[in-house]
Length: 168
Length: 168
DNA sequence: TCTTAACTTCACAAATTTGTGAAATCAATG
DNA sequence: CATTGATTTCACAAATTTGTGAAGTTAAGA
Figure 1: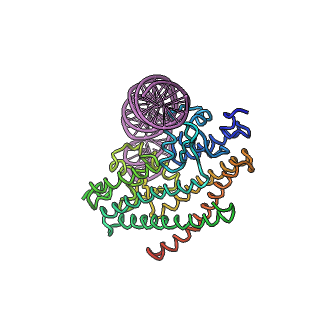
Figure 2 (figure 1 turned 120 degrees about the vertical axis):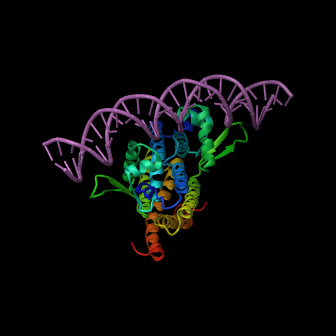
Figure 3 (figure 1 turned 90 degrees about the horizontal axis):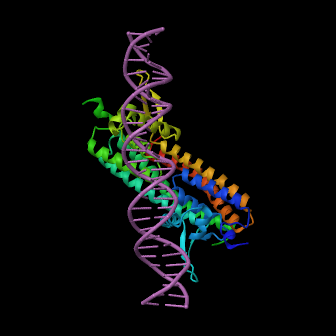
């Protein structure tokens, strides 16, 4: 069996793996992610090693190196994959950790923060004593609450996770 | 003062209100929402009554009735605005409730559910005993955990909210 | 029932986004 | 330091998305 076959995570039926990749990517797209990053992420997630090279990704998704490059740049900015230079070769590997989702969630928190500051401006410019200002204050309070809760939730997840899956 | 002036939420400086609307909409867009729905939602959020007619929205955002129509259709599908027929007139009003964000969050939960089922398929097709399968199982477990936590969080929010803002 | 204001749908034009090939850049090895 | 395999950047073409005007529906009031 060629190494290319291993690449896509094809210890199993490559057909159904690809079906998963495309299906899951489509869900991510629906949630707002760009298509190519979504496909790359899904491909990595379904690989046995959890890491693929640029060439393997291109092969597996039938896209150009340029497309892979753009996608992994985006994904690593979002902390959804990490890049590692293989010491022996001049290839680069892109990797997902199963807990990388925490980082993604953390990133959503950054979005929340920006919403919050936009709302604060809104309250300021509309006046805290106007009906609109009050509505926005409440919205703001909601987001602040959610923020705090998410932090606490992640703590609980780590505990839960350790109980179920063991340490790291 | 004309009713048109009231419409945009212009008991205050229309300039800075519009600046908020566009700024907040831009944040929503960055989080994945389409532009027009985002602008409409922001406009409603910044109106004193919390509700505007189609014509008022078009005026305030400088867009055609068709664009408003498309945007509010999307927003009501997402449960982010409710539509109400004014009994006296043949106009329709679109309304945000300050707690409408819960609905939006609930909608995100629906997305999570779809992710979960996609992951379950993935585990099935890759095999639960493969490395990739195990990674996906853990991811799946994470989402299931988050799901449950969000429900609990909303309960706590209702309590918190009542303490700070009073009942409804 | 007829009229008419208001909203919706549809086809299309404009603008934006997406992915490619080719050239440029980078870095590991001889 | 030259070579060469690998990735990134860039300009462009294709595809998709977005918003408009105009025609089509719907329902309130005469």
